[in-house]
Amino acid sequence: MKTVMFLIFSCLTLELSSQCHKKDYCEDDYFENFDFRSQSSFSYLSPGDSAKVTVVLYNNQEYRIFVCNDPELGQVKWKILLPERVTKRTVKSIKKDTVITYETNEYGDYVVDEKGNFKIKSKYVRIDTVWNVERITTYKVLYKSEGTQQPYFELKPQKTGSYIISVEVPTGKDQHYQGCVNVYVGRRELAKKRFIKEWSLGTVKG
Image (cartoon, rainbow, N blue to C red; front, side, top):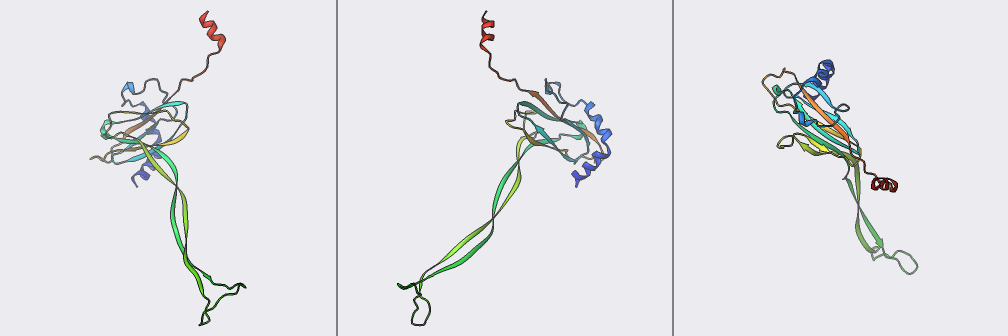
């Protein structure tokens, strides 16, 4: 419920939240030469709030992600999650059928006993399992700010994919206080490896 309230609140205070990008809560060396303009997010949060931001990270790029916040909010916890789709098989039902084979004579007729009942040649129980197959989403934790000395997370994705940045603000005495929580997602292009043509080598040697 707290997260839902935050989502409504953030829509009503969009103009205020847009001012958070002007707040400087981070160390200068966090930024280096990364470009933070495309997917960084800024918002006002209150003690006890939680929020999630989904970003798309592309291959052939290097990313640096970190979260900075108003010190009045305390130590904000954040983590990065990788959604993974997996197939889960569960038993829906088990069917048991008794299979009976009766004796026959050389003419293919069933053989009966002295009571007139068909003689049983073999008897066994056949078990059929009906499976329920469903696709579910699990979340792999790639980084947690709590308990680590590394203030930011760096990644070079092998393929393009969606990632979730989850933020939790600790509870405080003043539940009505609103402070900025800034999620920075920076990228820079990886150096491309290429072959050098023979004539170029000759020119260099000359």
